[in-house]
Amino acid sequence: MKKDVIVIGGGPAGLMAAVAAGEYGAKVLLLDKGNKLGRKLAISGGGRCNVTNRADVETIISNIPGNGRFMYSPFSVFNNEDIIQFFERLGIELKEEDRGRMFPVNDKAITVVRTLINRVRDLKVEIKTGIEVKDVMYDYDKKQVLGVELVSGERIEAPNVIVAVGGKSVPHTGSTGDGYPWARKAGHTITDLYPTEVPITANDSFIRLKALQGLSLRDVKLSVLDPKSNKIIVSHEGDMVFTHFGVSGPIVLRCSQFVVKAKKKYGVNVVKLSLDIFPGKKEDELIKELDDLLYEQPKKAIKNVLNGWVPERMLPVLFGRCDIDPLLIRTELSNEKLRALAHEAKNFLIHATGTLSIEKAFVTGGGVSVKEIQPKRMESKLMKGLFFCGEVLDIHGYTGGYNITVAFSTGYTAGQAAAMSLWESEE
Image 1 (spheres, rainbow, N blue to C red):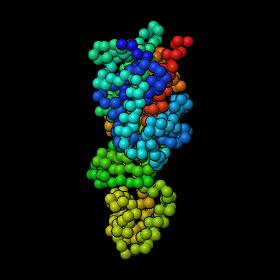
Image 2: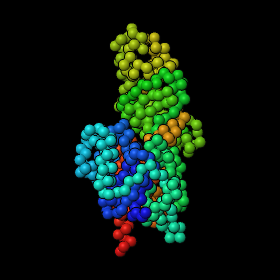
Image 3: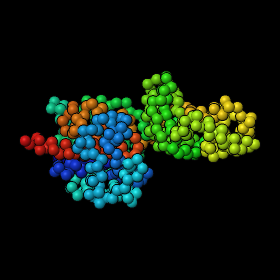
Image 4: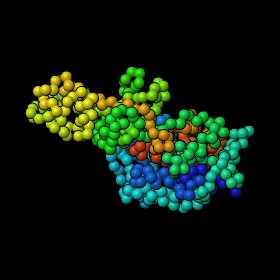
């Protein structure tokens, strides 16, 4: 059996690569070791599928902290607006939600998956599921891809192989790091793998005692502090939740990779996080607000006066950290303690010990080095006919439609370039 293009992996990057290669006239074979295509896509966006983000290119790249600048070239081929038009042409109506996130109007990821698969089939792409690739074959003298060898022992020849097998996160969807050995065998560098977009673990007493477990905070700011200087490395505003092992939620996931990197860079076991419960107010404003609240009810215990100032379960923790007796009334509370309470609400420290494992992460950090990839083609600089796209690459973004945009863009770019290389070889 011989094909023009073999795509390994039926996730968002692989499906889009198969579409692009098919649209440009190649005979395509799509292989996936699972029994269903698009498994990660089907659970993305909480089962709603955040297909892309409608922000401008500069904003999207700023939300891809892992080698985002590399994406200028793939976006020149197939960007977020192209993704929107692609799905709308196929009959999926999209809607824009907060921060530019784009979802199908029916909120069903399965619609996106089925539509993509139907498009692949319409293009006469041969699909084989439950088929595991053992190896990618190379001609080392000519620096050229030869095809793939299956676990069954069968060999399938092709001058172009697109590796779209994902990273190591969410392994039950099939992302188990299969692509890294094939890349290494071709001479590629695999940068250190680490979890990103993952909950953070912490060892503070309020975590161990589960005092705040399940408490959600809205519109707060979380910052990762440099272990050496205590200066802010990164801050994100939004929502978070306390868990039995630490913290989670959108802003926590965004901060997680910086905890991993700081631990490694400084060789420390703990990285401090600073939580600002009132990011829209200065500390002086907060002191005045507290004073006004307590002044209005001078005979009441401060714990009752301040009920509702912060979530009820946070008050005892804040009082404990400031060594304040919650039964005191205003006249018994020193100005120093009042200032301490305001400061604590603006600088609530959480001692991060790390994150959950890479398997529990939404996204894999690290991967095939982008320095060895042609950005306008997604083709290896080391092996002709070898292409990489999606999460197997050392590119990662925040949640919010950014990673899937990378997957679709790099997938389409790889598929188009692989198909067009057939015409180039005939010239």
